[in-house]
Length: 348
Image 1 (cartoon, rainbow, N blue to C red):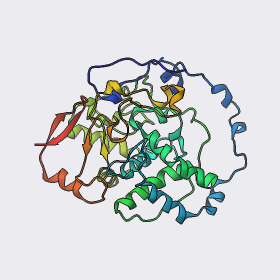
Image 2 (cartoon, helix red, strand yellow):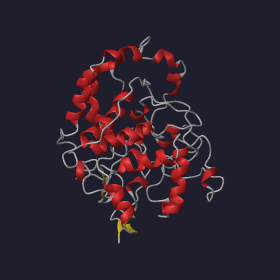
Image 3 (spheres, rainbow, N blue to C red):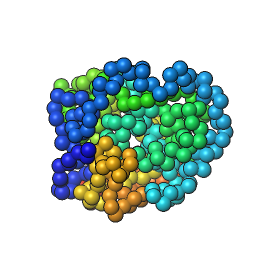
C-alpha cells in the first residue's frame, strides 16, 4: 500500500517533504504507517538466512578482480537513457553512493558496512534521494559476479573506481565486507518521527551535546544539513556540526577535510526545479515503480530533482583536480536562494 504525503507547495527544498508518521512506533512503521509490519518474521532471524553456511570471505577470493574493475570503469561512461549520466559520466553519482553507504558508521555502536543501504529505512531517507538509481545501475554487475561479490563491497568499490575514472590515483582496495539479507533491526536512528526533524541536542547551542549514539545532525540525514545549522547558512556553526558529526564517525580534522574536499571535487547537485513535482521515496511509492522512488513525470537524469541545490562545485565535475580548493579559498562567497527555496553559496 502507498503512504499518503503532506502537500507542501511553498517552494521549500524537496528533502523537507515527508510521510505521515505515528509516534511511539518502530523506525520503519512510524515512517510508513500503511506498510505491513513483518517484525514477527524476524523472531528466529537466522532461520530466514537465504545462504546458510555461506562464507563470503572465502568466496570473494574466487572473484576475478581485474575483470570486475574493468566492468566498473566501463560503467562510468555507459550512459543509460532511463537515467542519463552527467556529462556522460556516473563518477559523481557513484562517489555519493559510496559515501552514503558507509556514512552511517558511528563510533558509539560501531555500525559496520553491511549493505544495508538497499533496505528501508536507509533506501528511503531524503538524504539518499535517487541513490536507488545508482544501485540499479550496478545491478548487472552484481548479477554477473553473484555471491562472489557482496553489495557492501560493490557499493564501496564503485566510488573507488569512479575516482580512478576521473583521474585520481587510488592506493588499492580491500574486499571482504559481508552483506545482511534483510533490513537492520533495533538500530536507533533518533526519536524524531518526521524527516529532517531535529530533537537530539540537550543544548542546541552546544553541538557536542548531540545524543549518543547518534552522529548525524538531523533525523534521516547521513551527516549535516547542507543548508547550515537549522537551515541557516552560518559557516562557523556549520563547521562545529561537521567536526562533531565526522568525529563521531571516527575521523579527525585532517581526515574530515580530505573527505569534504575530495567528495566535492567531482560531481554536481540537482535541484533547479519545483519540489512539488517530486514523487514519494521507494518505501512510499506505488508498486509499479518497482523499487524506484522520487520520480517525476517530466524529469530524469540531469533534469531530475535531487538535493534542492543546483550546479557543480568545479568547472570540471567529471575530472579530478584541485580546483575545489582554489575556488573555495581564493574567492569571496555569499548566500543565495535557489529556485527550489534552498540556500546555497555563490561568488560575489
